[in-house]
Image (cartoon, rainbow, N blue to C red; front, side):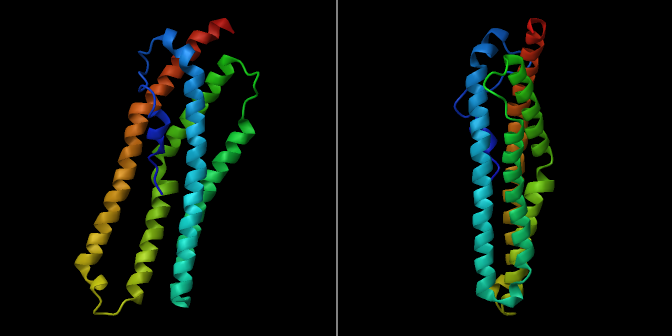
Length: 205
């Protein structure tokens, strides 16, 4: 599973300018950017949830293959299913607060500001609910494989284990860095744009 989807949210449009954005350009593009944002987040949520279910099924098959001694895989499955459940819960949350077609521009701006703040919080706590559980599930799988190998198997070599650990640590660090970059260069500037637009709209409501 990967959390680089925030980049896809903005891939086909100019990067947000932030607080220096021209108000005359914010209103005409608001609806199109809004649809792209919410559409991309919807795809992300279902894709991540589906990926988690697939990985859980693969873990269950691996456990079935090795038998009772692979029981720690149950913990890994629960961790991955928890991540999938988190994304499905996000979909339910959005459904509960979805705006009607007759919502005013100010109401839509307020909704998107709240949503962007929520997405920023998700990125800031990424290790707690996403990367951490995934890392733990990977560690459990590696541990089960290690226990099943013979003492002379190359997989038991400390340098091989160190290589695996370094590889997964780099992958997780890259995922974290990509999301922090998206937060800094994409989400926060867009949030500043919407807050500026909201201040401009207030006298008109």
